[in-house]
Length: 97
Image 1 (cartoon, one colour):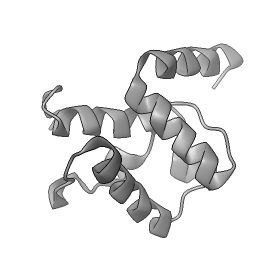
Image 2 (cartoon, one colour; image 1 turned 90 degrees about the horizontal axis):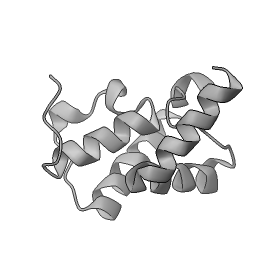
Image 3 (cartoon, rainbow, N blue to C red; image 1 turned 180 degrees about the horizontal axis):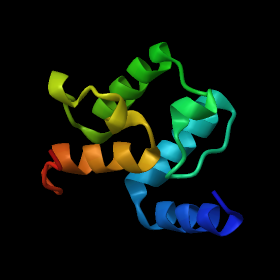
Image 4 (cartoon, rainbow, N blue to C red; image 1 turned 90 degrees about the vertical axis):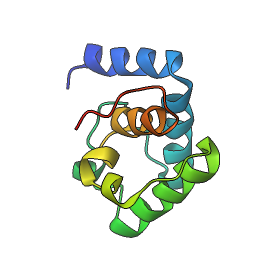
């Protein structure tokens, strides 16, 4: 990822309140700054235990229930993917499957 890609991801988060809140949560909990399109697991800041905490966070903060079929790595790999999952579960975005 180039510096301009990171800037674009940061600008995208500023216009997406779900992504912005997720970035803040991740930074607070992991002490690592992420971009919206960065692979959280590849970066090494997210463990399987923390992934479960992310599920609970999404459910509590955004008023959604994450059903079993949605508990895939792809839905939690990036902030963009999690934000899309939240919007989908809230009924604002069609299922991509």
